[in-house]
Image (cartoon, rainbow, N blue to C red):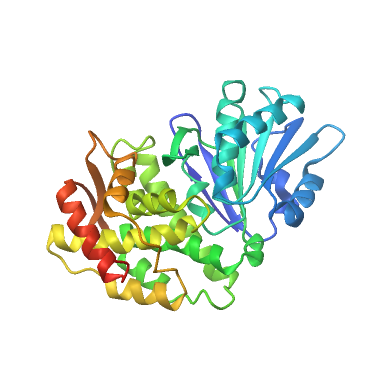
Length: 360
């Protein structure tokens, strides 16, 4: 078991990573709660929800569960409103606890519910995907708008993150790919040796718990170091969006759920590397990353997409200002920077990149 403390302006919280944590879940809560509301999805619910309920429910503690359809499409205003209604009907008060049991979608959605219900109540993140090692830490909670991803949200840190890696044993291959894209991102923005170590992973085989825990701990530490310096994304926290400017645009343009978040970010990272090489006159490990993505069956071909439409999507990215796209680029592996890219230059970069992938 590994534990690290995340420091925020409002409170500190522990991130605990290990095996068999769900059966001892109450030991990782910051205090006792009389009302607990578990929010999960249709995939995770039959696997882990009842076990978590049993570990929480006592004569003094009542536990309710709400289940949303699995997939990014559930991160919307209708599901958000329904969960608020459920919370009211379950008689949650300001001293109650919401538990986000699932992947990144559930964590973002349940966290946003917690941040706004009665002006904010406690919540705990219980990630069940590799991808959620990134989204469960840092306190960014949100829902999507049809015009863009995570445009409606808040900064609201959890009270704890309890990460039982045994839940990762049930992940399908596309979720492994999605999660490890964010692990790759953490390597690229932090440390060449970490990045190279991640590229030794073969996602087509069974992942050893020890290896997963090591990579997750490193990824969480990278994010924690940045978040503690810039909690509300006014400066270096933007570096965590490496690959996300185009990645989010692809997700929005295709329709949420057509491609996983991490798979879209993987393509976005390839693009960011190509732009970095042009803007900063450097050579970066594009070929190594592309080969690893291809070997691990990441989707590197997409339906035809209009370059101008993608640019308009990218302008809705939260980093953009005054309708100018700002991208996170690399001067070298481990040295991220942000840079504004003009529409004309971005159009050229995109056309060349899509042509390189054989998409135009």
